[in-house]
Each structure stands twice: as structure tokens, then as C-alpha cells.
Image (tube, rainbow over the protein chains, first blue to last red):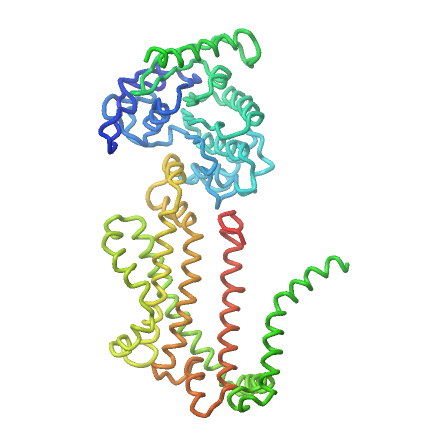
Length: 253
Length: 261
């Protein structure tokens, strides 16, 4: 059984220089609880693809199904984490941010705050429940964003380079934390990144995309036990394999 | 203990120092005999007049009438201005329709409208309050509009993805997101309201009001009463700033890190 199904999705951008294909003929599917990474250089349409799955963009052709249901717009079955730290609402505390989705759902205050606190505990930020975002570091803000996207219990978590703007040490820490969170929650994750090592560390399967137009170049299942050791030979082999897929195209041009 | 007390003392001193210098210069000129005492009274005369008019209930009555007009006009401007500005920020059609009018009207000095409004709405309170509301609304509309435009797309996307419909998006995202600009607009609008109100009180033949007090005092060369009226206007402005705007900002946009204090 597939959880997310992307069938022959094409999206075209209208620009002053004519119509530019963003993604063309992209198809893939994920199993329930699968961690899928989409890797590619900037401009390959990976973020566009994520926005289509999120329902912010409508494809020109093709369809998206989640749990068998066609996607026609945004919905509470998907939680979204963006790259930009500014995604948190500055006027709400960490707890208020995490409780937002539940509040929109109409969950009573005491209940939603209890759930939000539980989610903050999952990302190890329960001590900062009362803090406003501008008092939190970038890494902490992204953890709050993850907790916020999980709080209303969506089946799917969509992540658009959430750690790309963090320093390398914090990023490593965040990746470890996300792997733990994923193990604990068993969400289906679609994670967009340009960082090959990050993809090998996190993913069950990696989809490699190439630009102009954005198409799928290769699919690489990562068959490594968790927690993964980024310095092991097998890990580096996977990294090399992905990099080969990413660079081949440019040589051929 | 001294260490804790001294910065506060220094703060108080640095705030009051310019006033002390100006007051000292004023006293020197007033007592030098260069100008007649009636035209350039020493500060003790002003203070005495201030005390006398306050004790007699005259000055409080003037101040009360002015504040009532100010709050009436500014209140209308705040409600209408914020609503209109947000509408223009949200609706393309409203923006296209109203923006040319607002941006043309905003730079026109409010006093230019005064004779027209007084003819239309008559001398007295109605004309004055409507004029104040009209003139004060411009900066409020413009800043509210800017504020809505400044709401980050990513907040809207995040909120929509979490199931916020249009109404809750407005209340929970657009309004707080635009608040720094809205507060700036309200502050500018209040300043506009003050300026036009004091001027129009001199023209509108209202029986009470600080503007009228100042204007009427010229007939008897009562410069001390004029200065007393000016001092009260300054005090009310300062009180609104310190007791209304600053606490409001500290409690909202400053606490949220959206504006530095």
C-alpha cells in the first residue's frame, strides 16, 4: 500500500522570458512511515514539488494522492516545516506556536496545551515553553517548528531544508534529534535537501532530481542500520553514489 | 546602593537637563527687562497663572473639552483608519480604488480643509470632531495598509497549513503581524489629531478648549495664560505617550521582538 502517491506531475512557471517548466513528469510513491529524501541542486524543482504536495501550488498535469485521497489544497493531514526561521509566529510563545493547529481544530485550551507541551518535550524544549521565538536560537526555533507541525498529528511531515540555515554542529545535532523524533512518531516524511550526507543519514530512500526541467534522475534506497555512522565506509559509498548521480548530468551537457 | 541609585539619577538628570537650561535662559531674558513683562512673563507668573486657573476650575474645564474632542475624533479615525487600511491591504480592488485618493489627500495640510468642514458641519463640536477624525485617519490608513503588506507570506502559509480559515487567519496572523505598523500609524494619527484640534479650536468658536483659551488670551495680552495652555497641551501629549502608547508597545510588539523599545 502506498501512502503518498505522485503521478506524472508537471508544473510550468510563467516568467517574462516565457514558460519555464518547474517539474516535468515526476512520479513516485512512499510507503507508510517511510522517510523519503529528495536531493538536488537549487533550481531542480524540489521545493516546488514539496509545495505541490503541501497544496500551495496546483500542478498543471498529474495528481497527488495521500492515503488514497486526491490532494486539492492544504490540509491538516500534512505538517509542514520550512527552512526560514521566521516561520514561527513572533507574537506567540513556543507553546502558543505549537498549540496553533490544535486551536484551529477547536481543541480546548487545557488539552491543547498539554499536547503542545508533550510535543515540546519530544524536541527537548519543554523548559522553553513560555519563551517567545526571538529569545530562541535558530536551532531551537526549528525544533519548535517541528513540534508545531507534529502537534495536530498529521500523517505526513513535509520538510523543506529545515536545517540548511544552521551551523554545521547544530545541524548534526538536529539530524540526530529528527531521526529520534521520526522513530518515536513513525510519520511518513518527505524531506527536501541539497545536502547529500544529510539525505544518507536520514532517509530510507533518496530521490535524486536534476534541473531544467526538474525530473527524477535516480532512486537510491539506503540500506543501513540505524543509528547511522556518517564515518562508516558504507555511508561514504552511498554519498559517493548520490554525488555521482548529481554530477553526471552536468558532464553530459 | 549608590551604584544602583546613580544610573537612575543620571537618567532623570539627563532628561530634565535641557528643560532646566531652557528655563534658566527664559528667566534671564524675562528678568533682563528687554521685553515688557506682559509679553514675556517670567516662569513664576506662568506657574502662578497655571495654579490660579487650575484652582478656579477653568483650566481643567478647557482641558477636559479638548481631550473629549481629541478622543472623539481620534477614536473615529482609529476605528475607520485601521479598518480601511486593512481592507486596502487585503483587497486588490479596494487598494486600486482608494490608494490614489489616500496618497493624494495625505500630504494636504489638515488646516486647509478647516473652513470647508466648518461651513459644512457648522461651527462647534461636530465640525471640529469630524475634521480631527478626517485628518488623523490618513497616517492610520497608510500605516495599517503597509502593515498588512508586511505580514510575512510564510506566516500565512504556516497558518493555512494548520487549518486557519480566512477569519482566524485575520485575527491570529494578519492583525498581530501588522500590529507594529498599526501602532506607529495610531501614534502619528494622534499627533495629527492634536495639531489640527488646537488650531481648529481657535477657528471654530467653541466656548471651551485649550486652543480657544490660548487664542482668546491674546485679546488681553495674557501671555501667561497662553503659556499655561501650551504647558497643559504638552503634559497631555506626554501622558498619552507614557501611559498609553509605551505600555501598549511594551506589552505587545516589544515583548514579541517585533520592535525595539
